[in-house]
Length: 366
Ligand code: PHE
Picture 1: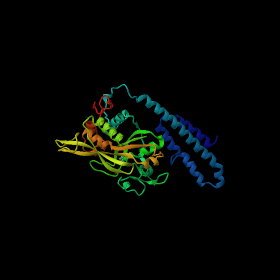
Picture 2: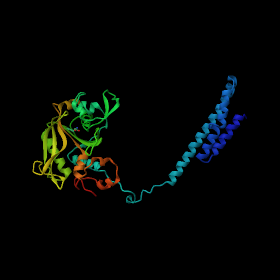
Picture 3: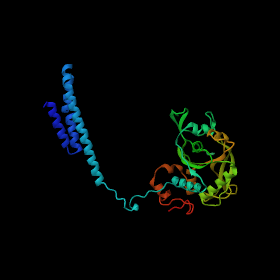
Picture 4: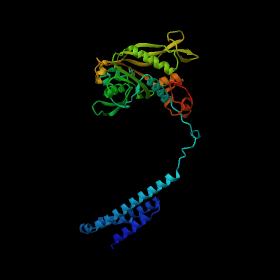
C-alpha cells in the first residue's frame, strides 16, 4: 500500500470516529488547514518538475478529495445527530395557559382595519390588496396623472433608482388608489371592494409619518351616482364612530382620478379643549374636520383599466386609517403609532380575543 493510501485510510478512520463537531474541526485543521499534513503534500507539487508532478499529482489530489469527502459526510451525520438531540430536549409546552407570558395586544391600526373590513363586508364589499412597491403607471398614469401632471409633485414620492420593467419608474405607492386599477384590470366589472394598506410619502411631523395607512373604496356598476357615494360614506362613518350624530359636509374638490371630486368633512364640537365628533360644524363652538377624499371615478380611469366608461360608472374614496384611529380612540401624536413602545400599546392596544363584530359593537375593548 502506498504512503498516500495509508494516510487516506488512517484519516478516514479517525474522521469516522470523531465524536463531535469540535473534534471534527480539529481533524480538518490537522489535514486540510493552512499547516495541515495534506496541505503540505499539495504544496510539494509546486516544487516538482512537470514530469514528476504529472506522476504524483493524481494521488495527492485524490488523497485531498478523500479526506474532504470524509469530513463532509461526518459533518452531516454529526449535525443531524445534534438536531435530533435538540429536538428531543427543547420542548415547548403548548398546554401552558396563555396568560403566563407577556401579553401582546392588537395595534389600533390593525383594529381599525378590522373594524372597517367588518363594516364594509356588511355592505357587500370584498377586501382587495395590491403591492406597496408600485410601478408609476399604476400609481399615477392610469389614475389620469401623466408624467408632467402637477399632482404628481404633490405626493412627495419615494422613487427607486432602477427603472420599472415596462419602462417608467418604480416607487413606493403614495396612496391605495393603484389598487382601483389593478382590481378593475384583474376582475373586470362590477366591482365592490375596499383596499386597506400601507402608503408612503416623504413627510414627517405630529400628524404625518413617512409611512401611513389608507383604505381605498371602489364601486363600479351600472347607473352608480353621487347619491350612492354619499349614502355609503354616511352609513360607514356612523357605524365606525358608533353614533347616529354624524353630520357630513361634502365640499367640491379636485383629484385627477375622480370627476366630480368631493372632499368630506365631519362636524365636531370642542369640549374642554377636546374635539368631540357630532353636530354641524357651522354651529357656534363647532368646526369641520377634513376626513377623506372621494368622487365619481373619472371615465379616463375606467378606460385606462380596460372597461367601457359608457357602460360602467362608479365612485371611489380614500381615507386615512391612522387619522380615523386618532379620532375614534383619542391619540394626538401619529408618530407614537410607529415607535413600538409597549407602554403605548398597553394603553391603546386591543385584546387579541376581541374581534370587532357589528353585533357586539365594532370598537369594544375587551
Ligand atoms: N388617493 C387620494 C389621496 O390619497 C384619495 C382619494 C381616493 C380621492 C379615491 C378620491 C378617490 O389623497
